[in-house]
Image (cartoon, rainbow, N blue to C red; front, side, top):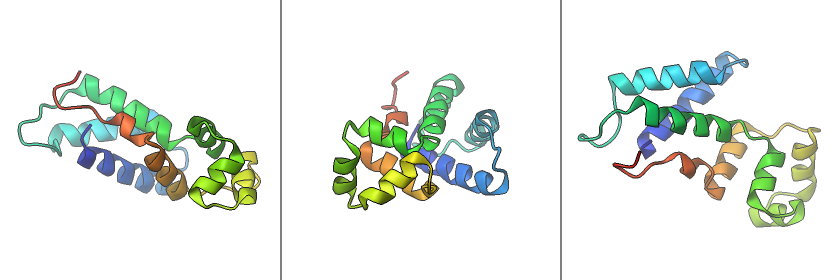
Length: 128
């Protein structure tokens, strides 16, 4: 998945999630695959490979749906160090992780981006 494709997929996800809170992975995957088969968003010579793209879409879906607690756990840091690293008050991180307060989706996406979770959905050109 190219950078442009990933950005498009994230925008689509956010748009659809506003319209339908029960937006599913299958709906997301089929919409993204359909769009990329019509408009491949990438280098002009890139080949559209639906099977390779499906695993990227699945990984992206998982990253976009990670809870704050899963993001903290993925970082390998304790909550206090995580809060310090991203200059977020500890009590805020704690409230997000225990579900007292919801963590905004854009914050979760930003944290995933900064931790490299979203980059795991990218493939090098020619890699299968």
